[in-house]
Image 1 (cartoon, helix red, strand yellow):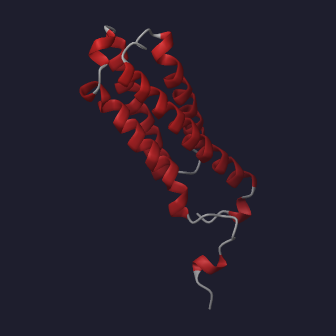
Image 2 (cartoon, one colour; image 1 turned 90 degrees about the vertical axis):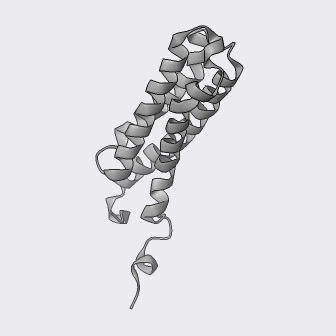
Length: 137
């Protein structure tokens, strides 16, 4: 008798692996939300720098958590997270806190990580919608 994992399509990762991008986005968002306490946001002279990281980091973590808990019908949240990642790439320069080197570096790294991970999650969810017969959940 075949087990569940033996019957699974070889192209399709196990459900646990599908959660990894969103778990990573939760961690990245959490990091971003606490960076004002740890990094040089105060040297920017712009209160917006700290608030931006707290709000965007919290939003990233919340949306990724929703994707983990309710993966069906919430793929648009991954696309929103991609857009938030793009904002993180622009925010230090648009908002004028690029002089705070560590805060800027953190925003850029988190932005790139989120764009990649949330983008992969969004594309995988889109592919799963196009081929529901391969869906394992």
